[in-house]
Image (cartoon, rainbow, N blue to C red; front, top):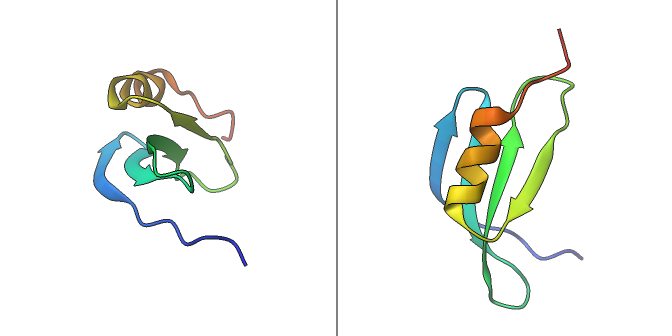
Amino acid sequence: MPARINFRSLMRIGPVQIGTYRDRDGRTKNAAICTTANCGWSSDYGTSTAAQLAARTHRCRVS
């Protein structure tokens, strides 16, 4: 069974939501996830600044 991820420090920039979580090794990570239907883009980053930059520059290809 996969580990349950609890997000903290949620932030929204346009359609992208950013959350901070701890991975299974106990390191703090930041995830940026597009919430637009059928987009499917998401990525993990080591710093919050990198996740915010990715959120600001993300462009959905879904119309």
